Each structure stands twice: as structure tokens, then as C-alpha cells.
Length: 346
Image (cartoon, rainbow, N blue to C red):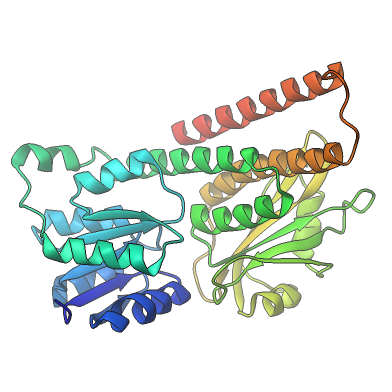
């Protein structure tokens, strides 16, 4: 039946509006909202909603941490967990913690409505002692790092397998926001001979429902510095970045940027930002973004090579040069994978 109270815990306002207006209110459900995990936990404990729809990656507490906290307090509210990049490991953790459904974004109205109805029709059973012990992590911090490493690896594989350049750009921006929990992200690409002045090619601000593909020069001091750097750069404020703020449609706060490099060639810059007034990014965030940037660089080069090859007559047999390039790309992917393992172990 309709009329049940549903708590949406989601850090992107446009996603809250979509869920509330298109899925829940349109079918008679009452809506409560929270924009980070800590606030979501407090509202869940205080107001005991009939259902929680919650994003995985959020500030302060992620979705799995909120679920674990509810379980520790023996609060049994069905949860639908949503995420942009799904993985088998995260799905298993979610279901062990009692999730009713695990839905990968973007989702349609019918898919979410069916999950809501299923969750409300069948409340989860109280956990058995053995199940509760299994659900309690030995170290939440280590578990979160391993989960993020798994997500980054899956994102990287998806990027490298994509041969359409625009799709690579859009996925890279989404992945940057998701992995380091940024509020907006920008991707710059360099043209041959203009490595120090990359052009903005993709952006997603807080009000955007999806990535916007553009092709324009934007005066960004941080992007220019990062394009000539070989390591990620952190900045605590957005001074000198008024052009980026105008394009994002939002005041920028702390910034982080990582160069896209193929061997010694500068391909561009992946840049992300928090909203004004929020906490700065950490050195750990810089390492994660740098690892993602390595995958993006490989994917950008692959997509460009594919486009160039498609415009040329195909040779009768694969050339030795092609074979050498494939071996080189395999070595690059292996190097990125080893870097991620070292990051998770540090």
C-alpha cells in the first residue's frame, strides 16, 4: 500500500529530486531526505522510516557504514542501496548487512518502484548470531579501502575497454566524482603542441544530471599547472578558478587535479572539486585520483588510436607495430594494477 515513509539518503540534490518526484511522491509515498551518511543515520534512528533508499558513496559515512550502524543498534529498516559502479564484492557486503536490493545507477522509474514494493512487502528477518558475526568487519577502514580498490579496478577495466572517446570522457568524470566523493569534476584534454593549455572536454556540476561534453578553452590555473606536472596537486581553495565555477554553475571549494600522461606525453588533466566551505581533499584522495588518471590516460590513447585506425585502410595482416603497441598497453595496465595494490597495502 502507499503512504509509507521513505528516507532518501543521497548527497546529490538532483538525484533526491528525481527519486522523490518521479518514483515516490508520484505513487503516494511520503518522503524524508538526508544529504550525507551521518545525517541519514540520525534521521533513521529518530524517525524510523518504513524504508531507506541510500547511496553507497557519501560524505561522513558511506551506505555500508550506515547499514552496519543500524544493525549494531538492532534497528531493522529495509534498505535499497544504490551505486554508480557496482561490484560483486560490494553487493555481497550489502546483502550480508541485510539490504533488500542493490541497484546500479542509472535506474529507471519502474526498476526502482519494483524494488520499493518488494522491500516494503517483505521485511528482513532478524539476523542469526552467525550472520551478525560475519557482517561485522575486523577493520572498517581496511574493508573500505579494499572495496574502493575493487571499484577502482572495475572502473579502470570499463574505461580501457571503451573505444568511443566521448564515452571515455563521460565515464572518467563520473568515476572521479564517485571514487573520491567529489561534488563536481572536469576533464581537460591537450591537443598536439598545446600540452600546456588543455581544453575542457567534459564537466559535471552539482546540478547536472549527467556529464556535459564540451570543447572549449577554460582559464584554469590548476589545470595548467597539473598539465605540466607528473603528480597530483591539491589546493585548499578555488582562488583563480572563477571560469571553472561559472561552467559548473556552483561556487568551488577545495580542488584536486591529476595529470593524464602516456609515458612522457601529456594528454590532459582530471580535476575535481568540493563545494565551497567543505573540507579539503586528502593525500589519499590524491593517490586514488592519480590511479584513476592512469587508467583514463590509457583509455584516451586507446580511443584516439582506434579512431585513427578506423580512418585508415586495414592492412592485410596485423603489423609488428600493432603487436608492439598491444604489448606496451598490457604492460601499462599491469603497472597501474600494481600501483593500486601498493596503495591498498600502504
